[in-house]
Length: 76
Image (tube, rainbow, N blue to C red; front, side):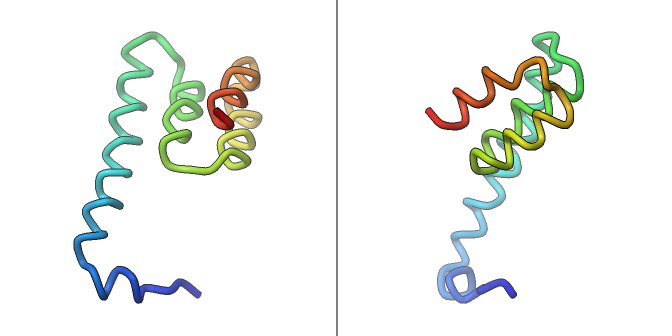
Protein backbone atom coordinates (compact mmCIF):
# COMPACT_ATOMS: atom_id res chain seq x y z
CA UNK A 1 0.00 0.00 0.00
CA UNK A 2 1.29 3.39 -0.97
CA UNK A 3 0.37 6.53 0.88
CA UNK A 4 -0.63 9.19 -1.65
CA UNK A 5 -1.68 11.75 0.97
CA UNK A 6 1.45 13.96 0.54
CA UNK A 7 1.00 13.98 -3.24
CA UNK A 8 -2.70 14.79 -2.99
CA UNK A 9 -2.13 17.56 -0.46
CA UNK A 10 0.67 19.14 -2.52
CA UNK A 11 0.40 18.26 -6.23
CA UNK A 12 3.64 20.15 -6.88
CA UNK A 13 5.45 17.09 -5.47
CA UNK A 14 4.67 15.44 -8.79
CA UNK A 15 7.26 17.75 -10.37
CA UNK A 16 9.90 16.34 -8.03
CA UNK A 17 9.08 12.80 -9.13
CA UNK A 18 9.10 13.79 -12.78
CA UNK A 19 12.45 15.51 -12.34
CA UNK A 20 13.86 12.39 -10.73
CA UNK A 21 12.74 10.22 -13.65
CA UNK A 22 14.15 12.72 -16.15
CA UNK A 23 17.46 12.72 -14.28
CA UNK A 24 17.70 8.94 -14.52
CA UNK A 25 17.05 9.03 -18.27
CA UNK A 26 19.55 11.84 -18.87
CA UNK A 27 22.21 10.10 -16.76
CA UNK A 28 21.70 6.89 -18.76
CA UNK A 29 22.04 8.68 -22.10
CA UNK A 30 25.13 10.59 -20.95
CA UNK A 31 26.77 7.44 -19.60
CA UNK A 32 26.24 5.70 -22.95
CA UNK A 33 27.61 8.78 -24.73
CA UNK A 34 30.73 8.63 -22.55
CA UNK A 35 31.35 5.04 -23.61
CA UNK A 36 29.72 2.90 -20.93
CA UNK A 37 27.84 -0.19 -22.01
CA UNK A 38 24.10 -0.43 -21.40
CA UNK A 39 24.47 -2.39 -18.16
CA UNK A 40 27.07 -0.05 -16.73
CA UNK A 41 25.07 2.98 -17.88
CA UNK A 42 21.99 1.64 -16.08
CA UNK A 43 24.07 1.14 -12.95
CA UNK A 44 25.33 4.71 -13.10
CA UNK A 45 21.86 6.11 -13.77
CA UNK A 46 20.13 4.21 -10.95
CA UNK A 47 22.18 6.04 -8.32
CA UNK A 48 20.06 9.11 -9.04
CA UNK A 49 16.80 7.33 -8.36
CA UNK A 50 17.42 4.63 -5.81
CA UNK A 51 19.02 4.06 -2.45
CA UNK A 52 22.41 2.43 -1.92
CA UNK A 53 21.40 -1.25 -1.63
CA UNK A 54 19.25 -1.08 -4.76
CA UNK A 55 22.06 0.52 -6.77
CA UNK A 56 24.53 -2.08 -5.52
CA UNK A 57 22.18 -4.99 -6.28
CA UNK A 58 21.51 -3.74 -9.81
CA UNK A 59 25.21 -3.15 -10.44
CA UNK A 60 26.04 -6.64 -9.19
CA UNK A 61 23.59 -8.05 -11.74
CA UNK A 62 24.42 -5.84 -14.73
CA UNK A 63 28.01 -4.61 -14.44
CA UNK A 64 29.93 -6.23 -11.61
CA UNK A 65 33.22 -4.80 -12.88
CA UNK A 66 32.24 -1.30 -11.69
CA UNK A 67 30.78 -2.47 -8.38
CA UNK A 68 33.46 -0.84 -6.16
CA UNK A 69 32.97 2.57 -7.81
CA UNK A 70 29.18 2.37 -7.60
CA UNK A 71 29.37 1.32 -3.94
CA UNK A 72 31.49 4.33 -3.09
CA UNK A 73 29.25 6.67 -5.10
CA UNK A 74 26.05 5.25 -3.59
CA UNK A 75 27.23 5.75 -0.01
CA UNK A 76 29.03 9.09 -0.45
